[in-house]
Amino acid sequence: MDTQTEEGATTGGSRAPKSRKNGTSESYTAPAAKSNGDGTGSDTSGAHVAGEGGDDTKQDPGEAVTFKSGDHTEVAERLVSDRRSRAPFVYVDGDFYQYRAGIFRPVRRAELSRQVQRYARCRVEVDPRGLRLRKSDVVGSIDLAADQIEEPDFFEKARAGIGFKDCFVEVTAEEIVRRPHSERHRARYAHPFEYADAEPTRLLDYFDGVFRDDTDASDKVRVIQECIGISMLGKATDYQKAVLLVGEGANGKGVLTKIVGACMPPDSVCVVPPQRLGDEYRRATLAGKLLNLVAELPARDFAESESFKAAVAGDLMDARPIRCAPFMFKPIAGHIYSANKLPGTTDQTHGFWRRMFPVSFTRAFDGADADVGLAERIIETERSAIVAWALRGAQRLLRVGRYTAPASSARDVEAWRQAADDVRTFIEVLALVKLGPNERQDHGIIAGKLHDLFCAWGTEHRIEKVLSRKAFGARMGLIGFTACHDESGRSRRYRLRHPTQEEREAVERERAKEVQRV
Image (cartoon, rainbow, N blue to C red):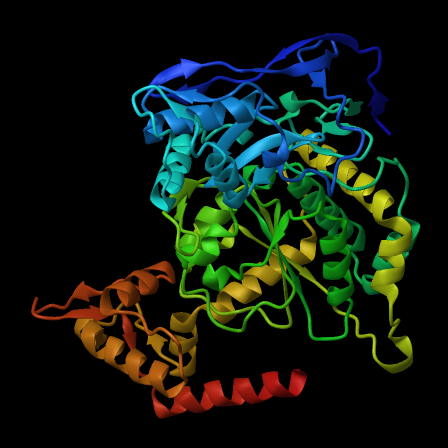
């Protein structure tokens, strides 16, 4: 196991990154910290990480505050100055963050509001009555502070790693290294326990059971390990994959999703079904999270596939928290979904399907085979070992450059793609026959009439979103049929025709044989 511990820190100063202030650059100096000699530092307040922090507004800001004019800009500057005198303070992805106890933690606006309110009645050089603050003044000053210190790419420059109670663990393709806590790591999340490099034997026994009959069982375990680990590092979007745990109920998927959720750092998981990623309010909950874990995927079709593809790829997205202004962010979360059946989709593009990574659960654990409380027992005894195991998977992914690919996943994607392709299904159900090379184009079905048949068929089968004529034509092209003008030049036709009675009967016989085989 490539794990190293870095020691021998010496005392020294630490400089935090520059931020914008009124169009200029102002650097801030972080409190004295330990330096490791390689550009990193250690925060002596980081002995205890997760679950700490708190409201800083109770601290005395020091000397009496005097304002020149007391306008919103000056109050915002004072707020930023006071916060940065304590620790690095930034605004990213619609939230304020301050370095506290080893990681950058969100700062609630209510906390900042209380701090600004404390400036009320402070001395103002141009007004003997002192600083007067209305609610709009408080809100406006906080909004300007956000503008002054916004650094959209602040966490994009973070080291690939995760915090623990006793250290920060950095993961590279070559090694896994323990480092002292430091604001230079730009970590946002930390586990509330110490790092321990161990093997999660109970978890591996669980995998042996659920994948017992699968020839690619070890590859399935590896891809799950890699996805969890790379998500912890905040680098999942570099690999642009969503893992889908698929299988009818009582097959172990629920156990795995409970374990994964419990082994992620506190507050690092969101639940946004891919079908809801088109909603700007739901999308806002994705900002800054490490993992989007959906334990029960809705049966609805993927109607917002563009938003899904952007979220998995880490593309720039807009979002809006409820009752707040919209903001732009780049998602970093990995995606793990669990479903009894794979949902339908109208998106048949390569960009959609290449992001899908199904992992099938084929065994059933009913009655005496069911192990009640298994997830809870594994979490209680192996949580720290599971995290270390996942980080080893992330290291392997960083080294190899691509996910392990179970053979069954490629087959499952192709089967899902065909089952989700309502146009292909429509052609097969109607048993339409491709024209032979010697048959004339005007023997084919007129493009508009074929689309009308498709719409009627879609309504009859309750397809959620029937394709427009243009989209239908594009999808027909994907499966090898393009409408062309007939000999008269008046109509565009597909090189398809309705079957003869004999051809239809032959198709019915084949379908009956297939049902018997199943």
